[in-house]
Image (cartoon, rainbow over all chains, first blue to last red; front, side, top):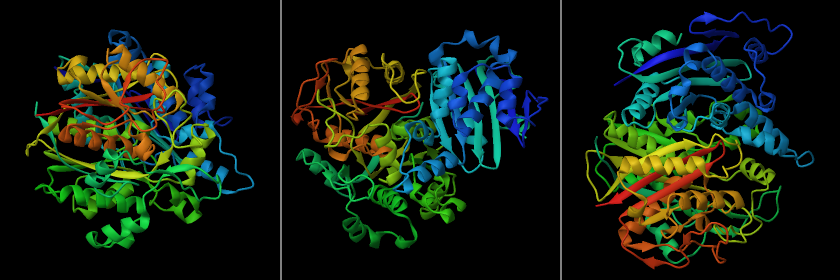
Length: 206
Length: 377
């Protein structure tokens, strides 16, 4: 039994691609992530409550999971056998700074629980899991840059140990200057094509 | 699949800077949670703090360039130095991987503008400093998954060793108390004004603590304690509250038992997360009940160390190992009143007992749940 990559998305330099095809986005009148939200035709009010990092992870997951390659097969897998295994570099730097600003001044000290909860980089795993009812293996790892070898090996080992039947894998990072995301959907397979290997992932992660 | 053995360990906390000092304090049922907060935001708060002067005095001479590291980095390095000193494992080998569990790392560096412009607060940066200290060239794996980070880090390391990616792992968990974390938990009204009381009917919130812990794992060197199962699962329910049906923790335990090829009746003891918040402890009781673990002795170590976030899973695994080795289960400190909701068998005084299989659980924000099963041979 091998593992194959079914579908992938990329967000980089204010552009977005699904399976290599660029989305035609007009974000002159709104934020970049909101433009993707509109383009996908999403109606999910919780989106507006999220911090930028969660918005990025959520939008990236919607691009991946609402696409027909994945949508047509997602019900083949048990909810508790779908994993979400992601990596990040800057953790929650922007929210962390905002939260510190809200407490450092004794006079203006006002910590908000709605802000504090987003100071954890794994919250987006919760957001994606809630939206899609994924209850399987979950993990958020922090590396300086996307660690492809680790990501591929770790996810393959979860398949090998029968802990997952399908998985959202990849990378997402947001800081005040930039959004960067690369997500893919992998599943167990008997086929040889599009194998979930470092070689193949490096070809689609550009 | 290759078997993963636990070779060595360390705990740095309010109760001492070695596993032995810490376990002796647990045996004496003495707590490190004290009314000792001296910050300017909240006047009186129970916290479990490392005695910094004592720590420096005892560890400074064992660590090169001690002053060049932040306190968070110092306790991680000491924890690994002490754990590694007891075993014959080459920390610098390319067959050794460092796995680091932390939620907020050097968060205090974000207080200033200069701090925000440097990489010092970044979790991968601290991890790299630790690897550099031990001359290990593999990129460290940092697990930052809220309160399950520690258990998840051990699961991750075990997974990497089982499949042969590495032969040895140095797993370190650490977090330090900061105004940031205090204000955050305060905003959730999750902090008790008095030392926390896990699983007690009158529990009213958690106590925060700081600690570092280390576990050295290996598939090549054998020992009496092995990791036989572990899993992580999501509630898919709420980002800041546990599931009412304990779905994620139930699934994580189920998956761990399946991997360990055991049933619930094989489990001799449960080391619970037991934060002493109303919802967490109730959720854990439900998960244990759903697995038929009502009669199995269970405790929480939070009454001794408080909630040490990224360190908690690791130091509680170390304490569970000491319980197995010493055939002694530790009283769940703070538990006075029987839980009238879901019934579980909370340990109300130290018990002498042969313990061969331990289940350790954790749950946290983001709907995260983790569990791990250890066996003594």
